[in-house]
Length: 117
Ligand code: F3S
Image (cartoon, rainbow, N blue to C red; front, side, top):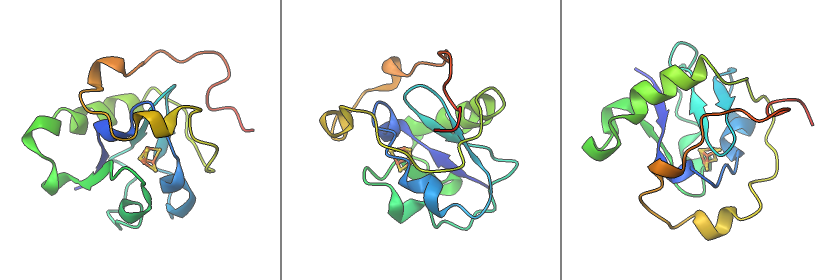
């Protein structure tokens, strides 16, 4: 079992989840974070920290969000670790209550994403 970052995170990336994670399981893309299922210890402390309720336990994944389980696993292997919280994306609040954001998720890492700031 693992925890899973779902669609609500896209274009928000508040990163409050990273600040409380006791292990190094979050990986950062341009506009989304993912959890490495091989590292997550299922503690659940990240769930209440996310302002947009993007993180769920694997067993609580809605059918419409099922693809985020393999997506987290795949992108965690490609994206760099993020070890500290940081400012959210500049227009995060504008995207916080938007739905159907899946097509907006960028998997391509621009230069310097994931580098310590
Ligand atoms: Fe994303 Fe929520 Fe973390 S918006 S970066 S899952 S705090």
